[in-house]
Amino acid sequence: MTKTKKPEFRPNEYVVYPAHGVGQIMSIEEQEIAGIKLELFVISFEKDKMTLRVPTHKATEVGMRSLSSPDVVAHAMKTLKGKAKVKRAMWSRRAQEYEQKINSGDLIAIAEVVRDLHRADDQREQSYSERQLYEAALERLTREVAAVAGGDEVAAAKQVDEVLLSRAA
Image: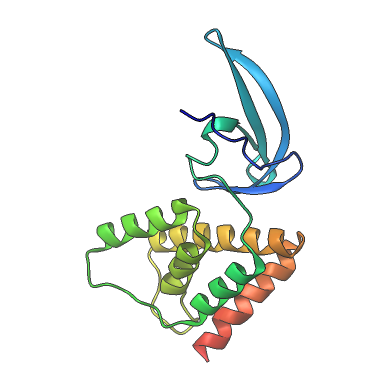
């Protein structure tokens, strides 16, 4: 068995953790848990006022990844421009699929959720749960777009919004 290679994540780096979105690695610390020494990434999600400790050897396994490349962000923006694909399945099943996409940590999948749940002002009302999923996906997308571009969330939100509005036109 080969020793697993050290993850390439470093302190101060922004990463994406599937279930929580964009976070920043504050440090790498060692802790002894049940007599076993563990090396942990300490990741801060300041927007959610949350700190997560992820064993370094499990990081990739749980789907933690570096920020998307600008190419992937461009692809996500292109995805937003697409036509909404709404399956005829029952809402509970669709909601489950959307939830899985949001928590997959995959920026393109998240963009698909935003695209599919986005409503122009003149369209039918969104249910509460649709709105919740839409906002969760939008927030994930915006935060990562902002982080890739250097951190301006307001500009990122505007950029995403413009793409969505250009689609409605």
